[in-house]
Every structure is written in C-alpha cells, then in structure tokens.
Length: 82
Image 1 (cartoon, rainbow, N blue to C red):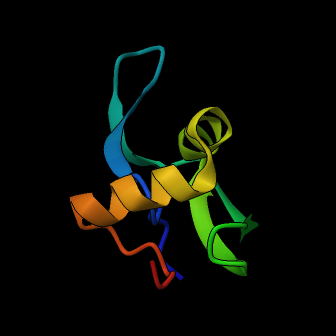
Image 2: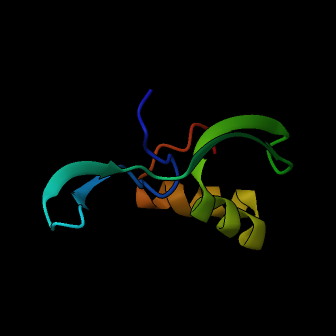
C-alpha cells in the first residue's frame, strides 16, 4: 500500500537527520495519511479514500463533492465515478 494521498498527491520526501556533531544520515518524512470513508450525497454513494490531514481540512471547508470535482479536473485518482 503506497503512502500517497489520493486527493493532493502528497508523498514521502527525503531529508537528513542532523546530530549534535552535525553528522547527517538519510531519513524519510512521511505524509500524515488517514483512510477515511466519505458519503457523497449528490451521487448517494460511499467512497473510501486515503487522504492527508490537509485534504481533510479542505473537504471540511468546501465539501466532499466540490473537492472531488476539483481533484478530478486536476487529474488525481479519486476512486469514484463522478
């Protein structure tokens, strides 16, 4: 299972751990993902998406249907038949 947000496209990025002596070792920064079921009243169906916390905030602000239409227009895999 990949660690990629289905709506925003956020994925792991790489960086460095920096010790007190300033030595650097590689590490990964993982996105804050949640598997969540959403009910879309316009299409009367439930969809399950793996979304980041940022996407959840935007869904709460704009609504799931409008956000899915916007993401579909941008070309992301939304997992629904809109």
